[in-house]
Image (cartoon, rainbow, N blue to C red):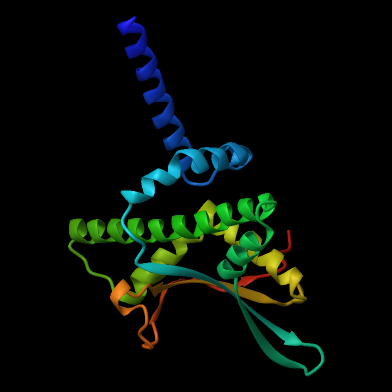
Length: 217
């Protein structure tokens, strides 16, 4: 009887950690396809781990900037939209019937996280290569290399696809329009400073190259 209890406990332990790893992996088709199970898992198990997680030190912002010629005024126009806050607000507003918003939040926020992680990874690689080759490149050259590598990633492509959706929703013309993606961080004030009126600094993490909104094959 004791052996059976040990075996069952072991199986539950393995199952729990397998699910934890599966649902905390970067966004992928399998994760998104099993979103309803992830929601159930987080609701009953995952939230308990928040006691052990370090508190967040910053909020993320995702901006899409569109540059195009206004057909009415015949002048160049720039329109910028922050997209993470509206996603969060819409998700709260539609709860508990917010599956669509939950998927969007998962994919877009997950992509932003992955981009930021990749940035650090690329900088680390550059640092190692420079040390090995005994060369030092300028900040501008490093930043250019980082942007080039980031723009090859699936996470960045997810953000590009969403930029096109946001453009369509806001009536941005597709022809002869360029856009860029910017990710920033805003420091979260410490608890003792929550009532402070000091304006929090918004730091740019990455600002992409300009890309055509409508691509031709």
